[in-house]
Each structure stands twice: as structure tokens, then as C-alpha cells.
Image (cartoon, rainbow, N blue to C red):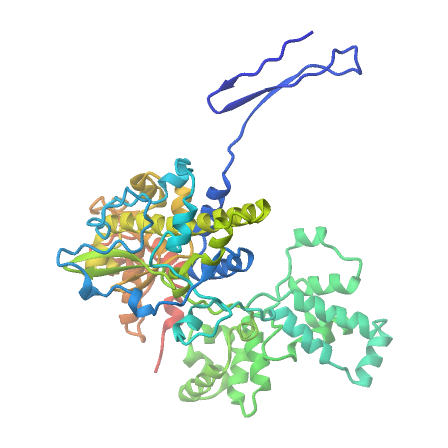
Length: 569
């Protein structure tokens, strides 16, 4: 008979399985080992809340309020009695400890607002040391861990305009494709058109499917895009008309060579609003719109039809000579192109309007810069519901009732604690960012230094994933405007890559800002080439190669080349 063996070494769990001998049912003895990391529910909740932005956090609080009866919103005290104003602070610059839980002994009230690495609010949660018993009596008595955090009922009427403003609004609008499908449902072809399609062996149902296939082939700008030849072999359809559409979209077959159903399907799509939808390139997009606009200058349409390449290069004199008109007439016709939309799909797109809410702010108080967290009225007034106190104190209450209250009370307290840890961690990260980017806050955005997330992780002794969750989608209000925290993390360009360079590393954000200023200040009749921009940057002490300038101009700043920025008037 075999003896069981079980050994625990470090974090490795050695599991020994007991089986019968091989003579019994053919089973054999075997061992296996595996390394596991189990996250506690509290840590998982902290990670989830940390990665939410301010608006998403309000939504999460509402959902928690609906599921946990031990959480509530209280509006018993006026807001102005709970806020701390600047003139109430001591002359020493110390801030009141109104945003901190009582059990954070690592915080010192005199150093709370200083930009030092004293904030370690999430250390107890991350190492699991904060797992003691909860003083339920104290929580129910005080209302929450945070005296500055009573809450109010969502269903109660509110006289505070900021209350309604703080509530996030979800966008449930339809996508570009869905809105075009709605137009397709309203489309009805003429009798002659349907008869011609029927002669080609295409029923109305099948024709609508062709139009819908084209709708699904649109990009976010409203342009048709086909798949590559390699992908088309994999996605080859059983429908020859669909394959013909793909061939046409790839440019392997002109529209005039396509069958009647394919031509008509494209014309139907291009007849939808806004005009320009369903174009295969920018020129066709402009022509569709120009044809549909009443009284559009005929010369403008001729330019699009015959001289589009010259138009892109702003060769007005060549266009005038080719069309037999004066340069002034060409310039007037080109001015009418301002009525055309280069991205018609944006008018129907489902792109959300981004509402930016700052989670942090850097302000100057008493002669020094301080980092503060910004909480919405909902986040500041969260507390534990006190009406359940009688159930815990009532000796006649059933054991199941008390257990129900204790369970939800524990969840409520852990949720509030996770909120506090979120802000302490974000402040910790922001203080470390400030120390490395002090010139940005004191001198301006042009002095942003190269920095990566690992630098901050090393400074605050946290994992880089914690830093990433703390900055992703979070914004800080600075003296120079509201910036996403990711903005402070930029790559650098070594200045020793070119002869005569200083050898230091310069932030890409600084280079982008310098390029943009040069382009904004250039003579529009003689715009700067990429080499000219590189030369002018060198005069400012910034050594950047022409290819790097071209990459930043095209990819980051989305600025046209010099030939297309040129203006004659």
C-alpha cells in the first residue's frame, strides 16, 4: 500500500493523487505540480474600480447601490457645509485629512498635500495585510469610513444642478451601417428598374442583399473598402455577384464592366444621405456631392472630372490652361469645394461625444504645487445605510437576518474601501509624475521629458500594470489645461544621432509641439518642406532627421505635405 506524500515549497503546490494499484481498474499513481496565483475578491474589486474613469465609476456606484441595500446616498447635510475652502486651511499649508480613511496610519496630515512619495494607500490591500475584523458598530455609527462621504437616494428629487450634470449618459445611437440599413428599408425601386433586375436573374430580395453587402463594406469615413486578393480567396462567396463586387472594390474590374445588379446596387447606396456615402475614393466622394448640390459651379465639376491630380498639387495655372479659363476663375471654383464634406460617414457615425471629467488636479496653494483628487458629488457622499443597525442590535432578530446584514455590510465597506484605495493610488502615481515632470507644471508643455510607465512603477514600488490602470482614461486638471495622464508618457529622440548634437534625449511631445508651431507660423504661399522644418528645428537646438519630421507630421499631427498646404490667395 502506497504512502501519501504532500510537500509545500515556497509558492509551489505539490499535489499527490491516490489511485488504486494498476491491477485495480487499470489506474496508475501520478503526481503533478503547478504554480497558481489567486486574487482575493477584495483585490479583484480594487483592480476593477482602479481602471474605471470618473464617469464609469459613477455608473458602477449606481449599480452597487441597486444591488446592495447597505449602501445609500444621503442628502441630510448641505453640500456647502461639507466642503473645505482655501481660506479655511492653516497658514502652514497643511490640508485637512477629510479625504482619508481612519485606518490609514501611513498618511501624515501635514504631508498629505506635499508632492512626496508618502501615499501608500493601496499597500495594505495589495499585500493582504488589511484583513482584520470590521467594527460594524463603528461603521453604522459614523456612516462610512469617510466622514466627508454621505450619499443620497438616486430616486429622490434633487435641487442641485451639479447632481444631474455628474450623471454619465450612455450613447445608444445606431451605427453608420444600421442607419443606412434603415434607409434601405425605405427604398423602393421603380417598376422599370425591378423589371430590368429580374431579367438579369436578380430578385428584389437578392438586390437588397447586394446593397446591404456594400453597406457592410463601408469604413468609418463612409468609403467602400475591399479585401485583398489573398483574403478574397478565403472569403470567396457562393454568390457570383458578391464576388464581382469584391473584384470591383479591389480595382480589378471597372464599374462599367460589372453586371447591371452590381452597378445599380452601388448607385442606390450612393443615393443615400448624406451624399458622398459609398464612394470608392475621395474624388468620387466629391463628385457625388457636387452633382447633388444645386447650382454648384460647373467649372468645379470639370476640375474634379479632368484635373483632380493637379488640384491636389494646387497647380491652378496648369488647370486654367487645360480648361481654357483664367486662374482667377479656377480659384473661385476651388473656393466652392468648401461646401463638400471629405468624410461623409462622420455625419452618421456612432462616435460618442467624449465627456472629459478630471480625476485629479494640480493646483498652487500657499506657494507650492499640490495634487488633489477630484470626486463627484455622488462619490463624495457614499455611506453605509444606518437603518439596518436595529437588526444587528435586536436580540430577537433571526440568525439569517443578521447574517444577511453582515454579508452585505462587509461588501459595502469593502466597496467604499476600494474607492478610497483608488484615489490614494492615483494620487501616488500623480505625485511621482509631478516629480519627474516638474518642468512641465512650472514652465509649460514644451518642457515635457521622456518618461515610460516603468519609471513611475519603480518610483512608487508598484507593478507597471497598476500604473497602467491608474493612468488609462484618467485626466488631470493642470494650470495649462486638462491632460490625459498618458500624455505625460512619451518616447524620446536621442540628440546624438546627428553630428553636432548634444547627446541628451528629447521628448517626442516637445518635437511635435515645435513642428506644429513652425507649420502654423509658415508663409502659406511658400510652406515649409520637411527638410526646411528639420533645418529650422536645428536652429532651435533640436536635432531631428527629415524622415522623423515626415513621420511625425503625417502620423501624429496629420498635417499635409508642403505641396498640398500651398495657397495662392
